[in-house]
Length: 116
Image (tube, rainbow, N blue to C red; front, side, top):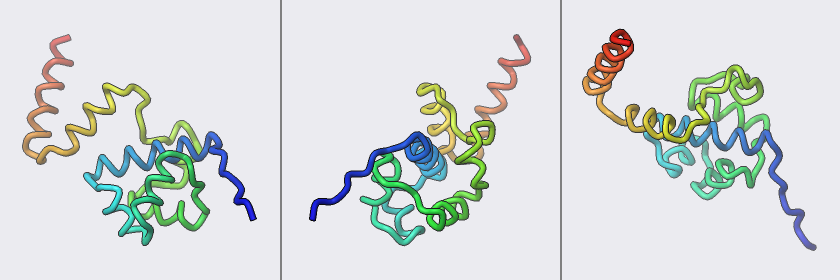
């Protein structure tokens, strides 16, 4: 019997991007996230690439791990990601820093913003 190939829909692609962003924000590897969800890192790769759809139950698990509402995956206004690649890289890099260094960067950014 020949398997049916999954075609990624817009939801799968957006969900994958959101999962990737949230995972990197938390400093988790695909393997770390897989352990938290009880799946392999290969399955995480499939979710992140849109090659595998999230079931409702798995979406609930993902939301619990990342402490976000399912609305983040359905309502664009609630999506916790940024489409600009450079900005995303900057944010992910800042999230990986220790809190004291993040606070310094925030102070510098605030000073630049106020200086106009």
